[in-house]
Amino acid sequence: NPDMVGPRVAWLMSFPNSGTTYTGSLIKSVSNMTTATNYGKEGPVDKYSRNIPLRADSQYGPFLQHIGERGIPNYVQTKTHCGGRCGFCSPSKYIETLDSFEQMCRTGSRSINDTLGGTKDVRLDGFPYPKDIVQRATHLIRNPFNNIVSRYHHRQKKHADDIEWSSNNPNTLEGFRAQCKEMNARYSKKERKSRYLSDDIIELFNGVPCHAEFFRYVQWHNLAIETTKRLKLPTHIIHYENYEHDFESTAKGLLEFLSIEEIGDPPSFIAGKDYLHYYTKRQRKATMKLIRRVATPESWELIKRYNVDV
Image (cartoon, rainbow, N blue to C red; front, side, top):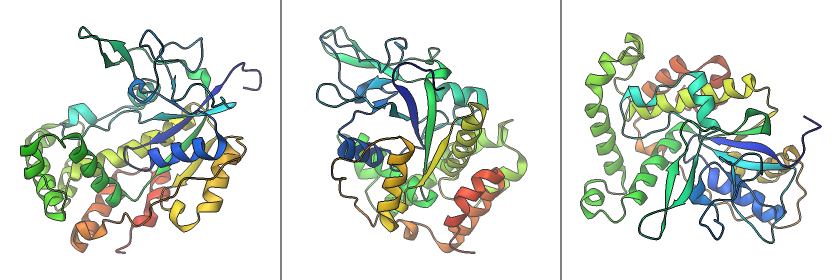
């Protein structure tokens, strides 16, 4: 919309732990511009402990991640994880429709004062921000095998102060495999009874570690593509691994897409986060068979490069 007044939302759409943090840091470092987020806990608050909306006409988000010296670009990279991304949960919690997913892309949380004099993060379910302020999208995608292990590592960080949880879920290959086994067993009965999962998909779950995680991964990318098509958003695709293999053109492509000028140095990219060895070859083949079945043709075009055991 060339007539829009004020900053425009440019979604950074990502299944969690697929490179969101680095991509946000890249924009901030090279441009000295702020980014935004759907999630209030990731941004500053004013003197009343309230998050600061990117736009005055959209009080339910998104929210600025920085204030003060950083400028606000025309297209503001805005973090969203959309929906269908829970970890330990049953199908009724993670199966999404296009409508519900798209609404979650525009829904987040914000900080409010609590009764103890501090702040807490409150979800804004039922209060999505307007569609028309979203003008572009970057769709970030990562190798599914690495992405799912990274989500396991994230759960470890969240439970860092829980000695019992940490001891039962060590930061090792064995710890990951044990948690996958637990996850598969915990929800198997609900999966078989779910009206959302067909018999052939249930059959393909066999032999796939953390099979629900891989289902969520594919469903997420399917719906992300459909959401950007529905909203007619110009969309830029980034494969996370390209930061390692072709950093210069990957970063340049993102900056050009957001119409942002490069004036600073990018943060260092830490390469080598490869966890293929966490899976056996048989498990990887079974996983890609499941992914191929669930993926739409457009999603498969993005994911098939990771089918290393053909």
